[in-house]
Length: 44
Image (tube, rainbow, N blue to C red; front, side, top):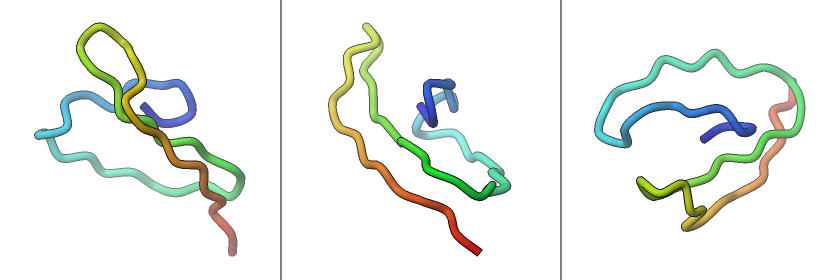
C-alpha cells in the first residue's frame, strides 16, 4: 500500500510517477494486517 492505496501484488510490476510530499509505503498480508512500513518524503 502507498498512502493507504493498494498497489496490487508484490510480484506484479508497477509504474509509479513520484509526486512531491510525504509518503508511507506499507507491506500488508492478505488479511490486511500491516507487516512493515516505511515513511519517506519525495523532494525536488
